[in-house]
Length: 445
Image (cartoon, rainbow, N blue to C red):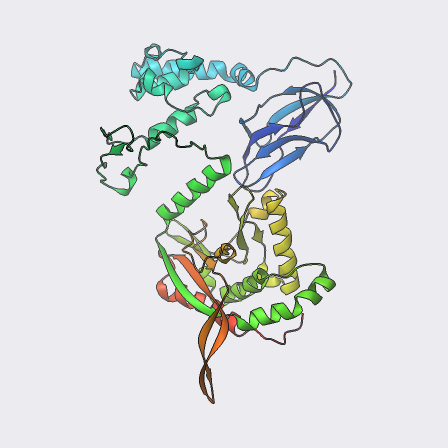
């Protein structure tokens, strides 16, 4: 029977693996060339993968929630309509390929360190299965069978994997937190652990009260959470604020938005105008456009501006406008609209969210006046755009000062104090405001 191997394709320069999130075809189904076969998720973006050939799906080598490396065979197609082979679970395939290797490793570990896997039964509560490797690690770390049963597994049927156990050990508090007896209707209280250093800081153990709803984070929310914690741990954040008078920008955009829509077929928002000013300021202060690697500063050649975009799910993604300084306002408008629409419709490609050197987040779209954004690593700065508001302001003229109504907004610039000092961070955001305040009301487009 002729068969074709379907491999996990390369999906970006930094993407090495992907999680199978959903098979769109079952074993025995016919598949046309370029027909969507499987949905996968990387740490960058979710994608539908089309079939590279036409045929009948005869085997799936990875199941839902399992991780495949780029180049791995994830499925087999029959091209001659032959009989459908009985599908073998991917966990069994992996066992067939490496069982002897894993067994030898475990035997050596047990022999060298006198560890007995028999201390923990391979079958825990509710039929939960524990592999020899998991049991040997648990025995080595003095994890009891009852404690092992409390760990949430990410493997098939809730199986506890090596990664689950190692993650549990990493987050396990070195200081036991003792609950304090309270009334049944009162929240359980905990004594505070003793913190000796930053590396010893552990998450608190939180007990749900009666009536509380337990919501498991989805994959993207977990990635966002890890990224944000890492950024605050790596970079000492400082934030500078500037209030900008953007009256000319607002009046100009209101004046040309209808003709722009008719001519370009695009709606022009404030975002591309703001990104244009930011790109100009980066050219004036190129040391904002850097990354840090150890004690080395990497000064970026290209100005690639990411724009944080809220998804319908409530999660956040940051598509990137490449070489933003080389685009005119029409080009920026088209790039902003296309990336924003693709983000909301889950159509971003991996390369669309890679290579950012500076990030912008529009907190004003939620009615917020200002914010203190967290740096998008490995960048060193991020700018939050506040809501544009009509406010009374003192207007200075040669004939004297008077009070008038002006359109104003706050710019909040967070930066990495390891390499960006207050002078540079403050001067940069002031320069962005200067470009916005000097906007030409008679500008042609």
